[in-house]
Every structure is written in structure tokens, then in C-alpha cells.
Length: 75
Length: 202
Ligand code: SF4
Ligand code: SF4
Image (cartoon, rainbow over all chains, first blue to last red; front, side, top):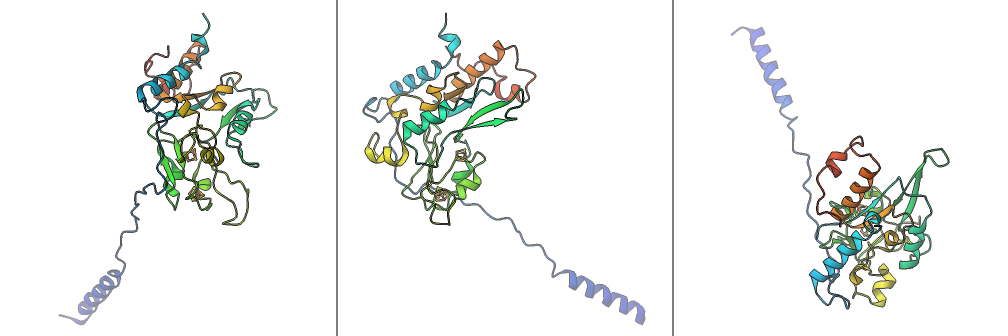
């Protein structure tokens, strides 16, 4: 093997070795799902008015929301 | 039941600030905090538009995501609430919220001096016994537990501000806009309101 050829091969190997330090490591963080840490809250239907009757509460809320539609209130 | 939402109709809002006052009074909100505010675009220019803005009770709420003490929770009806006992007043939620809903009773102050974050509760109180004095003092009144809608929406003089189950509210809005002879030309109309009546707002 002649000298210039050996030199160029060595140079190529050195360059490759230099590049090997530039590896890419993952930089994306992982997000953790938080969990509520505070006091537990009661449901709105577990109130003195509805006494745990979820269906009655939902009905009342629906009626109330629909009452905002004035076209349904005027004949 | 779906998700509780607010909707403000910019064609109807007359910037009377009745919602702001109703909220202040109903919840005895601390001085310096406005849980609801009316924002006016192009104020004084013909064609100005106003919108009433509070917490939008986001489906995927940024405030919940950033809170370092994890003191936010979402109720079964989609209302975003928080536990004031856990809040350290760091202000992360204030920066994360696109609507400026979280506010602090001591206003702009040094870190640790701002007090507990206060925001709109959709008149659903907080994690204290329903209707108790503690609940009222920390979070305001719990109208939802009485089968009522938030005071701001119920008080709105022009019914620009609607509150309630999202499908009911969008049915009302869709009907109104169609009666105005508008709709399709609005950007995003088909996505938001294009579907048939979800449940028939009778
Ligand atoms: S405080 Fe802001 S980010 Fe959090 S639910 Fe309300 S509008 Fe959304
Ligand atoms: S101010 Fe309170 S509620 Fe807001 S992110 Fe900080 S600890 Fe959480």
C-alpha cells in the first residue's frame, strides 16, 4: 500500500472517529400525568335540594339551560 | 350530561357589565379580583364588539397541567375547580391560562405574597361541604347544587351570555344565528354548529 493512500485512509478513519462523538441523544421530555392532591368534593346532586338524586338534578339543569332560549318562551 | 360551558354572543353583548356585577355580588369576590370581565374590541369605533370572559372550563385545561401542587380537579360535569388549601400562589396557572382567568387577591406582588389563586367556579363552589360557610368564604356560592346556572348568565340582560350543558347552549346559539339569516359564512361554523340539533332545545 502506498503512503498517500494509507494517509487518506487514516484521515478518513480519524474523521469518522471525530463524528462518532456527535451522537444524538433523545431530548424529548416525558410528561407525567398529575393527579389531584386536594380534598375530595361532593357531587352537586349530593346537596340538600336534590338529596343524591342525579336524574332530578340533570333534569333541573337542563330545564334551566333551555329557559335561556327566549324564542321558546314567547309564543 | 355532557360538559358545562359558557358561550357569549358578541352580537348581543352590550357591555353593560351586569355579569361582572352579578358575579362579584353572588360570590363576594375579593377586592381586586374580577372573575368575569367584559372585553371590548375596537372600543368607540362603529361596529365595536364586546365579549364577556371568565374561566372557560377548558376540556384539556392548561392550568391543570402546569399546577405544581396538582390542586386542580375537573368535576363530572366538566367544571374546572381547585383546592385553595393546596394553592401556593405561584402564579403558573395565571401564565398558562389563555383567558387570564386565574387571579390573585393581593394583585401583582412578590412571589409568595400574592395570596391564593381565585377564579370562576361556574358557581359550583369548591372542595368544602356544600353550602357551608367555609365553601362560601373560599369559593363563593354553590348554585349548581341548587339546580341553578351561574349567576352571570342568569343575570345577563340581553341573554348574550349563555351557560349550561354544551349541547343545549350550542343548540340555542345555532337557532339564534340561523334566525338572523347567518351561519354558513362564519369561519368554523360547520365544525362547531354544522351538525343537526343535538337534542332539540325545546
Ligand atoms: S383557568 Fe384558564 S386554563 Fe384553566 S380551565 Fe379556566 S380558562 Fe382554561
Ligand atoms: S397559583 Fe396555585 S393554583 Fe395556580 S399553579 Fe400555583 S399552586 Fe396551582
